[in-house]
Image (cartoon, rainbow, N blue to C red):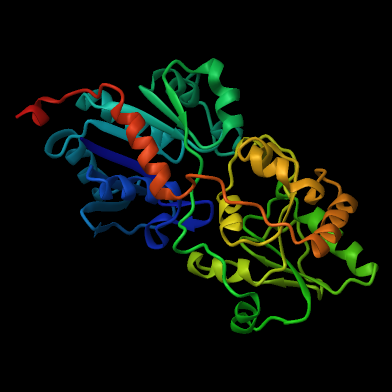
Length: 369
């Protein structure tokens, strides 16, 4: 069994290559560790560097879309190191490259869909041609990062599919002593700290979160807000109670999570966010901190058992007053949710690999020899 994974090097404001981040890196890596021959080819939209490296037995290449490095990877995919399966993940344009390579080489094509790509401003039809719709109809198999996404797109697809939620590295994201984390970060040991870490576009609900914290402070609560991630110009972060750290390396995030009294997912409704399955949900849960979460499909549908158990710490979307109420509840209740079963990258990769093996991959002449 030989797999070529085509992915996007920079996504969700992280570098999949240097940080070994997310499904783009962890799924192929875990498949390789399970004994599958895997090559990881990351397409770089942001820099002009071409890199070749190796992680264990997994060969990794990163190159700009238009470069000699990409030509080299195309040659390998078609001539020197053909795969049984080609998995494409990242966007529709990477998906089209994967589909073309699969059809030219005789491999099975798997399209990994972790967002509803046609809601992004950068998505364009090519004349009359709709790449997203085409890939939904012509992939041999499909992977989806969220349940709502799969349910919404089911009428447009023909291939078998599997839900593959984003996982968590349990060796990295784990419970640590709160005061020790605060001392290392130089944070107050006495304040009540609420934390949010990730992207800050308006539909992430940061404005609602900031309003809820302001309401609590007006009621005499000594509450501070700890934030890290890519700032949005639409969100004001200059209040004295807000500690904004900017972009931080992924290895520092567990320290930040464990420094907080409460972690929050304040998402609003939106065509993108309702379809997503945020990595931060399992990361938060793995650190064993109390949560406050809005009732969006991102949480409610992907983790229904945890949503049912959250009780009064669940709050209404776009409602700062109800969010402040949920925070006040968690200040006293300190309710901690159990981690869902089989959410480690090892378990998710093993389950997905078993599903792939249950089918009938195309057998290449080069493999038969």
